[in-house]
Image (cartoon, rainbow, N blue to C red; front, side, top):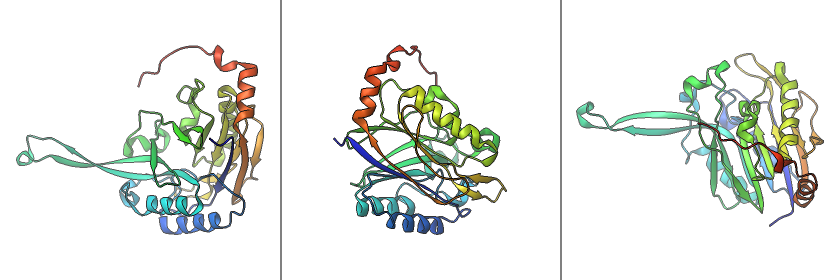
Length: 275
């Protein structure tokens, strides 16, 4: 178990639907990391931008991008994570088509966490962003994922999930919340406020990694990536519209002492979520 966790988030201007160029940029940024790092966090759909055309960019789980993540994790001996567009082939039994199964492709906005060993854990975005039509082209997830890494329990979410506090409810299950996003400048105050709220209400460290720049749909993104402690205090941030890195050393023992002293998580209401 590791009490201290060194984390970084890379804020970048993404090139529209150009995975090789985006990955090349992130690889260069990762190579420049000089201090020891345990966890590297990349934005939502970091290889393509927030596209509603998954058929043009989707990869399988054994595709180029995840293979690259495994290579980086091995070289740096650090976990690396972020979301990307994944395609899975679904076969459905059918009495038609001469009795052959019908084959369809399902697309997912999938958070992928790669351990230094190359092992993979995933989370599929639960809350599709209906304003952009994400629900029309991507299949939503229905399960949270709890990642155990170096003695830390980590709970990942994607962008729009941030607006729904019940989905991130902490029953003392995790130590770190991760939010990766393509969150537009027009609603950036909500991004900052909600990240702080999730940290405070769940008594948890939070890292939120957003993108910068302008996408093909003319939406602008100012970044504003943050790392917060369980009081919602900023440990690391970036000025808006900058490309760069947020980094912090998280102290698990300190957070556990705070939880024990204040006891807020013990006083929560009990309820169940219907999926």
